[in-house]
Image (cartoon, rainbow, N blue to C red; front, side, top):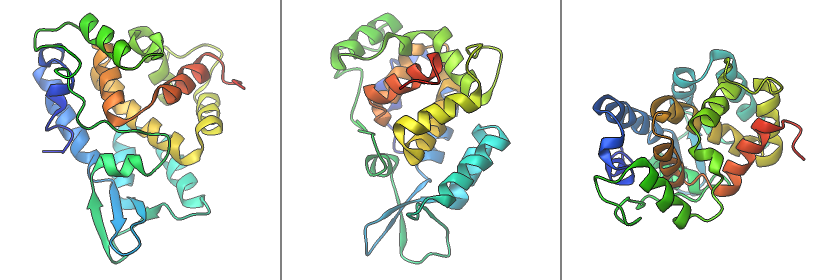
Length: 229
């Protein structure tokens, strides 16, 4: 069981998601926990190339996954490492994200600490998150907007008519930087695929993963206007 799944039922009141969704979240976050490596001597953090390739091809359209892998391989500073590189040890998702970019993981975020209980509703969770994270964009709680966000990345009828997947992704890269943009896209697509029925649950998971308010703002802004300045 992944390190995040150990407390995911404490992030979201359990009744808001189905038993099958909890099972698939367990699988997803187990995969996330396999993506990071750290060099035992230099303490540099890397993305584990074989695990990342499997993860991206499992959750993103093939062309987009290949484009992201090529982009990462082209960065001046090495961010990918394979099993042939000696001295690497696995690191948890929270350690990996904290070292990559504009992420601030909160691995101990729970609905109890938000003042909620097992019977709290999605509306209760939204209100608690808005109190805990002032300025969180309202769009992150809008199921239709989240579907548009998902479609803008992977393609689909729900996308904004004026925003193609390529335009959206280029906008996000421009604002977050290549590495952070790829990581955030790789995180949000499979999460949205699982929890669109509970938008407040998606927002809670994003917060636990450390997807900060400014990052959410960029995603929503690029969805509405790919030429966002």
